[in-house]
Image (tube, rainbow, N blue to C red; front, side, top):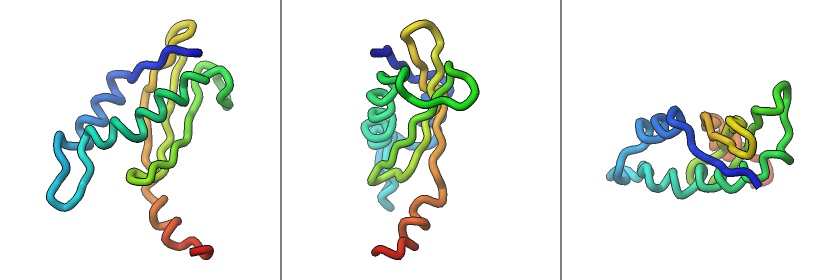
Length: 105
């Protein structure tokens, strides 16, 4: 099992994207985000050694679908033996449109 940390760049991205409190229009807070996708990524990257990689075994991705934030991809980097840093994440901006257009609804 790997130790997993959240890198400074990912922390900055989260804090600059989400405010400290939910908005009046229902926009989630930073806490809402931390308790959802990043928490799942912290757990998922513990199994870093079994995640697939493309070109460099030190860099792996983890795809997470969250009921509030949608589909996200987290990038984890092996920074030292047994230690993974979540370096960045991206939200799929088209996820909710794709779900809305699902012919099985």
